[in-house]
Amino acid sequence: LAVAEKLDATVVNMRWAKPLDVALLLQIAATHAALVTVEDGAVMGGAGSAVLEALQAAGVNLPVLQLGLSDTFIEHGDPAVLMAMQGLDASGIQKSIENRFPAQVERARAAIKLVA
Image 1 (tube, rainbow, N blue to C red):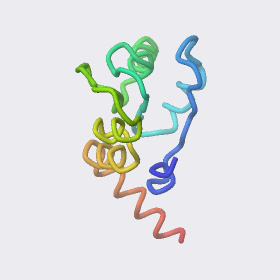
Image 2 (image 1 turned 135 degrees about the vertical axis):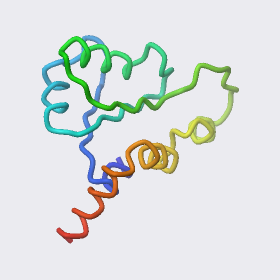
Image 3 (image 1 turned 90 degrees about the vertical axis):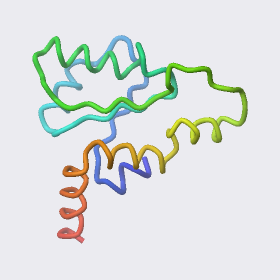
């Protein structure tokens, strides 16, 4: 949420991955230039994958950045530390978004400066 506020991004809480709210997803996709999915589970086969599948089935071609746990062994430990190691803390999420969508982030920042 902190990153979304900094980047003026829309947040949609996917409280459950199944059944996917396809109508809401398509509504969001129609009004945004890119999507980012963030989950505390594995990226492979996770909620982000379901989003990509639904977009493809609907014929929507939109850039999507999937953030979540990598398909590697993750040691046990403090959840906050482990999430940071995976880039899933606020700083890591923001860096991933800025790296993948630099033009969109810059436009959002410019719009925020104009409004402020």
